[in-house]
Length: 402
Ligand SMILES: Cc1ncc(COP(=O)(O)O)c(C=O)c1O
Image (cartoon, protein in one colour):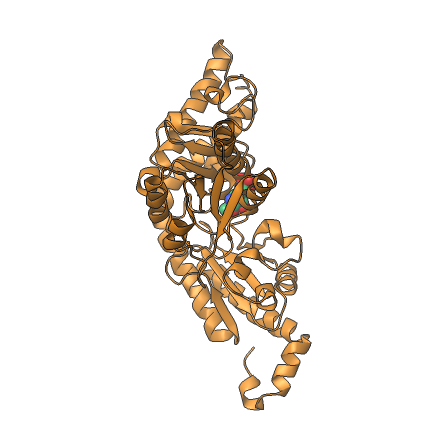
């Protein structure tokens, strides 16, 4: 039985055109892109084309793209690669500036570097989940080697003032990295407009295959490899290229460029309809994230008196797939570090759901999800002692909605 998939920030389905582009390289075109014979050259040409397609979507040169196993590896490469180069040189410990709302791929890497002696500053965010450029200015010092602030947050969708922060980093001669995994294909991403030196992206968020991504490395940036090995990727990432996945990533980027304006406008309209419907039909809700500086497909909602996990499981029974936060933190029951950084109490941070729409989301799906949600929230709240206490304490006439 089909389900309604509103979890595109976790991953997107493979576009049929992407699969079609990949198919020959999963079958007969099996050459190693480093081999000099015809099958090898065929693979090399396919990788070169994909590199151009990926570079073109972010306004980069093909030579500035290093294919990785995904967004996580790109983030690891950016942070560890820059800090490794500094460590090799200077006397004082290197300093890294990042934000409190980064994806675990950055946060846990920063923590590991901290354990190894790197100084790390975690920038706070405002109530909408936005880093203030002034805070970045105060945090950067002469030992700051790298500033890493994500382009758009995966949980609440808030878009960060990366260009402003990058300008400050540049003044202070620090390298600027942004994790643009959630921004790619949803908002325009241009490495020059952003002024970044390093930028991480991942194919499976743009209707490409899982397990492939890239790190953009601006020409001249001092960064060590993360994975040592053969001469692949101009010696910046050893290992035989995953040709089918790279080809799929390239095609996915090409499609993302063609569809960006139209799908962003469409998804924003549907997302706003969902948001309005929730506000109108369900009491005691709170919309999290920035009202306007937000990914067009993302809606994060807090439902008072209930656990997000209970809502998620009840929605799943009704064939609606959503998330309580990021896919990675959904497994444990810790409150979201993003909502905590935005100033929420742990209890409020628990009762949230993330709806993330995609290219194939329809108006009918929005209407169905609204109906199901009204029912599910009422059902879960009916079982909530907190909600029952609240209802007992207030006038009966006001308790009729959801
Ligand atoms: C902001 C952000 N960065 C990094 C990643 C990790 O990317 P990947 O799954 O390709 O390793 C994700 C995935 O959820 C993400 O949302």
